[in-house]
Image 1 (cartoon, rainbow, N blue to C red):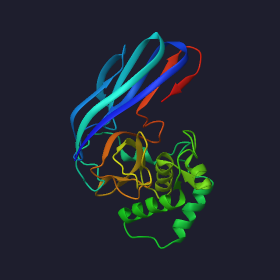
Image 2 (cartoon, helix red, strand yellow):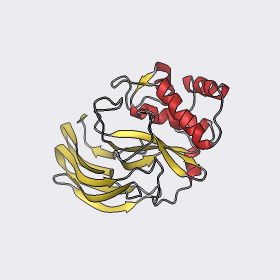
Image 3 (tube, rainbow, N blue to C red):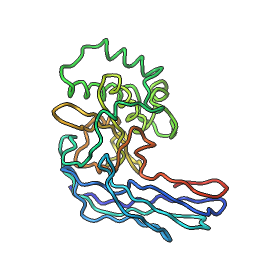
Length: 263
């Protein structure tokens, strides 16, 4: 499948900023499931640093802007050829050990309502094999958290989302990572894009998120608990991390007083 992307991230500051620096995970790294045809990231007045692959195999670029800056737009445009690999991440260059992704963060710590969900899953009939178990964990998250935009925010933890029973794709990914850790399986957060139709649960978002679980014999396998499937040719993978903060497409700091509005 050939997917085209146009993604604008616009920042407005109520007082001009003196300096802005950002780290971008906005460019897809090539693998068996995606080949970049053309891709560009631009921002007026910005200076882009060298692009490199980090230890997790994700493409990272730095960007700086000298002020005064009242508004800046980071524009992504590109085309990617995608293929369905049944969710398995193949031919992705990385050197980080999967064991790194057994470590929970504040967002993915299995506490409160998540522990109760772990107990329910443990008491149920356990499927044989890690792959079947991973599918069962993803299904449990999909049942525990109804997709409902606006009910959580960027700081909501997996346990909080499970407790209220509502959330968005970020919450599904965090909860699945937490359950995987409880089951002794390395898991990580993935950010990217998804081509959706109006009848899909997680439709209409500017970007998407899912989880990858490391399974013996297969490697990293993606699970989109929000949509009840594994990533296929409709998905473009951008970056990964232990949680949404680490895998964010844009991270950065600004020097100057005042507030920031993001669109």
